Amino acid sequence: MNPLSGAVAATAAPVSLAPTAPSAQVAAGQSYTVASGTTVATSRDAYTVEYTAPVVKKAAPVVTTDTTETDTATATDSSASATPAVTAAPAAAAATPGSAQAIGAELVAARGWGTDQYNCLVSLWNKESGWNVYAANPSGAYGIPQALPGSKMSSVGADWQTNPATQITWGLNYIQGRYGNPCGAWAHSVANNWY
Image (tube, rainbow, N blue to C red):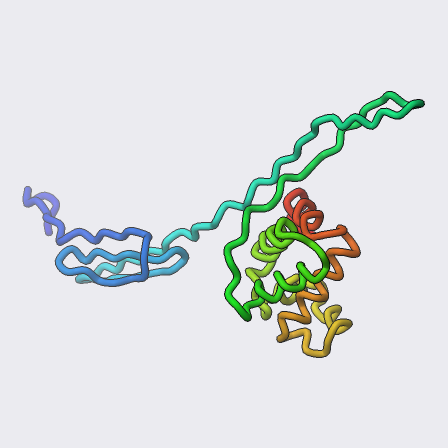
């Protein structure tokens, strides 16, 4: 079209892209919906439009500390000290029987820890690996507890690369030895982004 001719250009049907569900073409308007983190491309005439939906991340649970003073007065010492208390992790959903989380619930209970500790463990390992027995990190961390290096878990069993019970047992041993319990590990993870 000659820009000096006075003619007015008209556009073709608009393309509407909205990030929500897996891509699917809808009739007339060439509308697409795109799942978080995926890409869709469409061409019309000599033009191509490519759209990548932004990745939507879940917000991390918020852990607050209560620094109320605890009275530790004795007959010879009348001073008080502040003792921080970490709020518990969000309640975990019911685990599917036979799943890694169900194995974790059994192993947590076998150590005499309560539901609060299990909830902290679920939050911790959701953050670390999503409870994926094959989760691998470029740093060398591996498995549900993200052991670094992953081969450390061989101290519990030769099947450490594939067995959730072996990985969870190793992870609970590590947590108990280093943090005392899963809520201690979860509090450290929230504060430092690692445990």
